[in-house]
Amino acid sequence: MMQIEKQLQEIIIEWKSSGYIKENQLFVIGCSTSEVIGEHIGTSGSEEVAEQIYQAFQQLQKETGIALAFQCCEHLNRALVIERQTSEKYGYEEVFAVPVRTAGGSMAAFAFKEMKDPVVVEQIKADAGIDIGETMIGMHLKHVAVPLRFKQRTVGSARINAAYTRPKLIGGPRAVYVR
Image (cartoon, rainbow, N blue to C red; front, side, top):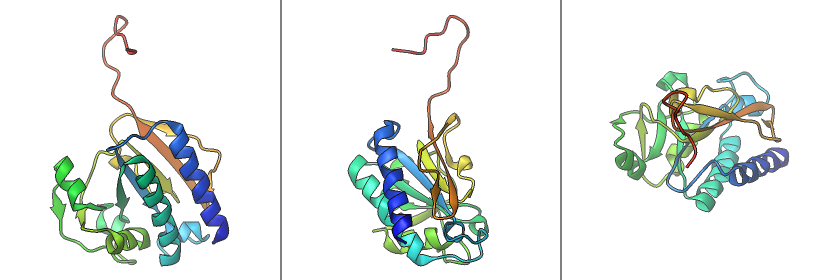
């Protein structure tokens, strides 16, 4: 568990220094706690691992002012757990489901228990995110996602992928993209 904590701290440092997340942006976390502990996705969810990951990203939230969204597993159609205030701010429609370890996943279930006023929404358009254990967060990112390659490439046994988004480049040869 100490190794996981150290790896998460490295990832948090890399996110903060990346310059790709800003206050009030929406950040999605997809996570297989099973993959983190070296098991096949969806087979061995760990609340202990979920707690470590949740606390790390709470730290990132406090230090940057981002809003967090935790992706559920495929059994809840990859819906997301977010604070009601975030849902209202972005105009996301609440759906009725309570994530549990076996339907939603340990990470989403833990987030649902820990958040102040959690709701579940079907989809979002996040500004950035991280995928721990290849859970497929891409469907919840804005249209132009740019992969990030961090030095810290794993959490436990799970591979990580990270991405930020940028506005679409439109126009042709005469278009200007810098201010």
